Image (cartoon, rainbow, N blue to C red; front, side):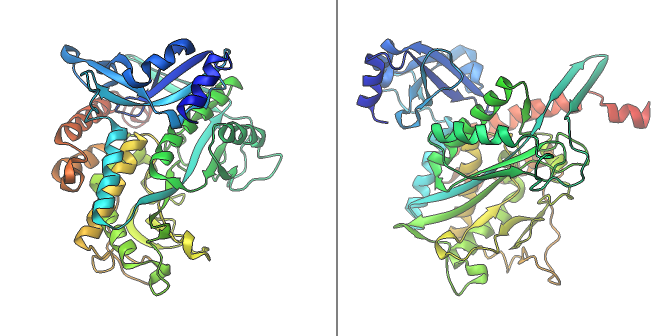
Length: 448
């Protein structure tokens, strides 16, 4: 929707309020609402906000500016008054409204410029799988002398929930309603179904979209799904491992590079129809997988999922149809234009702009350096074939240490900065201290 159409709807009263949304550095969504009559004045000027409360700057110099990205606008279904929501870019408070260097969306934009500079492609297209759990009740608390959580679903006695049919698929109507919400917001869905986890694990997969649209959609999808669940009295979570000994939840990212509207990843002569550039891209992802995990698996809970079992992608390898590998090459693709890789290790606890940016930079490093994943021993991971027995990091602390030691690929062309990486590591170590500085029920069971 362009500027004039938006303003016309505001002037005729069809839209009464405008909601500006932006992510903090960790990836949590914030918003501020303003009357529609005020919107035209701030399209270029922006709205000031306290950047220290978003985790970007210190309080001594905390003024930053939000500017709406008009193409991200959608009618917000959770406001009683007619409201249009926009995602925002973050800018400095100078008169030129200079882009703020640590704005995660700006970092993603810069990673795409590196892609074009390499002449490998014009953009990447992504087809994410959104996995999540729904519970009828969720309680959790953390006090100095007590802590605990309780989750419950009304059904779920079966062992494997994959593609469960009615009546076991108790959240079918929820997913139907969710897809309708997403499509009204301009997000096209490929399909939805019950996932493996027996207690209400779901999946919604969207169609392939360009990089910036994919990241913007990811923010909208989390907002819309959580809002819908709340309106129905459900509890929805993207936690990678909310239930012990049940399937974990990932953000599987199917991806391919496109140049002049052609799929750069395809070659009829290559392994699994992959081009040499696709293999080098895979080489970059696998070579940097351990440090990359600091962004793609950004929570302490992430590493409970990556321990193996339930098709968890714990092996730093690639292979056709191999769901235990970090990278799976879908084996059912017939259309050359759909040849792609599926990066299975990421989850949805981080900042989607930083997740996609870091993946692009790791893959491009492999292309620039011509890293061959076969020569390096990462695959193909198939039955009877020996490969390196490298595993994903076992903890967030280990991933952060890898990022400290190895981040040059992220710094190329000033896409990421040392300041952002340092701030990210600091924020995440605060989370580690919060989680591991406290005793857990499991420790009492073992040691009290």
